[in-house]
Image (cartoon, rainbow, N blue to C red):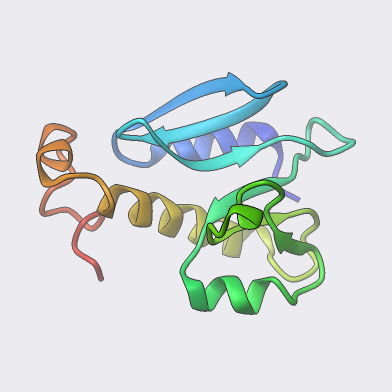
Amino acid sequence: MMTLDEYNTFCAALPATTHVVQWGGAHVWKVGGKVFAIAGGSGDASRPCVTFKVTPLAFDILSEQPGARPAPYLASRGMKWIQRVSDEAIDDAALSDYLAESHRLVAAGLTRKARIALNLEGSAASAGR
């Protein structure tokens, strides 16, 4: 399962990201000041649970998979966020893909002015692939 260092390294490589440790020690990654990934909350701090934003279809599918669940707090408020608690259904390669997609979804929700300021306009982050 992805370690905290691997998670932080991956998220740091995505464009225009910032990192903060908040909410009781969770490693929170943001783009344009908006959260796209959260790691923490597991018994083993070196291999944390990872929470990320997904599309409505991915939410419906992943919610039913072993090792994944609707993210506590976020999903209960109607948001489409999944928390990976083990790598049963979401291996590290898939998790990396979901983190990149979460970054893209959140970046796409920023204003055009914000995307331009962050050099995201015209990139894969805003292209809507």
